[in-house]
Image (tube, rainbow, N blue to C red; front, side, top):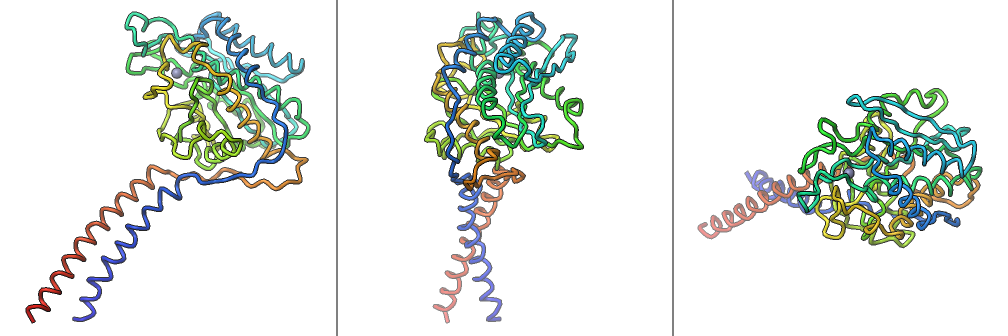
Length: 385
Ligand SMILES: [Zn+2]
């Protein structure tokens, strides 16, 4: 019976050990990736991106089904043709709720088979459903940040990458989504009866029309949503492929943008345009801010999402980080070693890991109580003997 008594001590000790070890779970699940960027000059200019937001706001409200939405798509085409008259583009026309909608896709380096998609939505919300003034909640949202900022960064990135296209070993898609932002929040629908992210879902449903799966494959999709507001601070978006989002954070931090890509970001799962791409197995990441509970940028779905709450520096930081990320992974003339997380297959479900951690802690606490009880009991029985 001596062995049994020892087991009574060993088993709780194992659980205590596991419990202490589990404190390392969040440590390992959080990104502590450090990268050594390859040395290139970054061409992205935040001031240019800012001017592309101003242009979009001057067009008007880019609401699905309106002439302004059409004008905005034509504006993108004219900007890409300024970069190169023969920039390849495709119009993805579709009908939603009896409304003509349109995603716009530009392709760079079609000779390369590995595709990276850079995406943003360009529709603006039809109603400012979260405006602090109840009288303004039926007014449209200017969408300077929510819509125009990501689109502006895509244009400036296209300019930067076109200049060095021959040094890049990947194909890049610049993809502008219609019909992202009309679903219902706590203040009601943007357009009654519409859902979120309908444009990107439609695109992915028909993605076979836009590439040849025999010769081409998708490496990654990076979504830019609300990247131009003041006090930029990205979140750890939970649907995103963690190895891809972690690397983007690491690249941003290594450029010195430590408050925009913090080590302790807010975590949340956001229904956004990256999800349709995740659903078909493409590693995808959403660069997005805390837009629901953020005293530093409380303008989401309000009439104040306008040019006054945009910062050039936020656009600059986002653009330069994506530019550096592409350089690091696809700059084919480099002889420098770069180690990131390519091919971004790994996806750690941090929420699940945290649930496991709490579960083990509860078991370990139980084990500590049992062990203490056993020790006391043994001691008192020895005392009696
Ligand atoms: Zn929105």
